[in-house]
Image 1 (cartoon, one colour):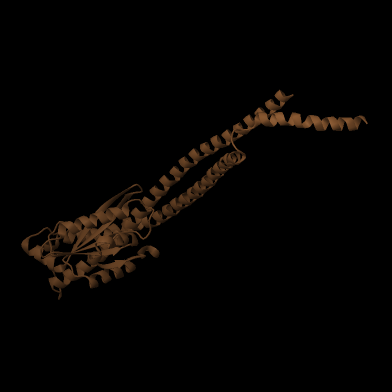
Image 2 (tube, one colour):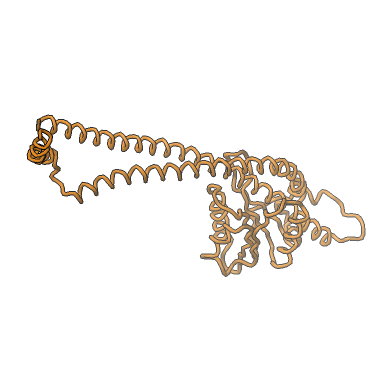
Length: 325
């Protein structure tokens, strides 16, 4: 009997007790708006967490690319330094005069096939365009030979009609003199020139490279410069013996000089590419670390704000219940 009375009294008391705390802690916002705010708060932390995960993955990739570039640089650097002994005797013998004025010039631009290596490709393109402006004029002709996908993509925009030959994927296999000499022979067969100007990046260190222009003159121009006392090397100090004429010897020397200069230029450019890629990937890894620190701070602040808000709601609800009693 007593239990039944308690149940009946409880039914009358519970609605009145329960109604007060609900009214006390009721938010001025509607239920949909409250759910929206809670949803935005939970999504924001999830978005930051996903962004942190993406940045960590990018950082791992850049660190791996830096290590790969370092190993390739060590493999190519020694060969590039040794190849400098090939073209230096030709420079001493035939000279190197980039400012010589000729009618037919061919600019050979060396670049990379892949990106993520700083500004080495844009640098050689700028130098090539500057050479084009300097050597154009009445009764003058300038043509381009492009080696590398990146320079090809840039030069095709405004100099498509002046490009006579383009070669890509040269660095797909380990570089050797036989491979480069075949390329040099193809260039000599496809162009007519008075001067070949090879534009490439000369390797100095991992963080430094120098845009360089090497000039190879045709046998006719060498003979002409020799007759008028132009700027040549020590060619006139040697006597020619045997059945070959001076023109034939100069023809052979010019072809061999071009292949040697191309071999050295390709190796120097490959070293510069790997060094620039190392620097770029190192900077990217540091930037990813800094971004990760900022995202971690943002995530912790957002999470702490969410926890603080929930605690305030719990305390407010408990205070309302105590006040209702």
